[in-house]
Picture (cartoon, rainbow, N blue to C red):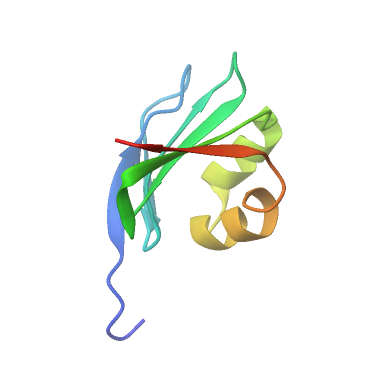
Amino acid sequence: FAGEHLMVFTIFVPNWNEMQIVSSNIMTADYDRKSRILTMVFVNRPRWEYQYYNVPLPIWTRFVKSESKGEYFSAVIRDVYRYRRIIK
């Protein structure tokens, strides 16, 4: 998109290979399969880490495979799963 800057970040998927994601909103994303915690850091809030609880593995898998990580996050995760914000 004209004038829009997209950033490429590496995310680590436990028991998978390291994957590349492209997102203008999400800086990092990681998922712990055992605890089912999705941890995210956003571009506009780099000092805040968000931990989303009880996220099922299929949701994480669809997030990783989605064409737009930000749109998928907004539609499926953001207002659905309980979260905690941690200031680094």
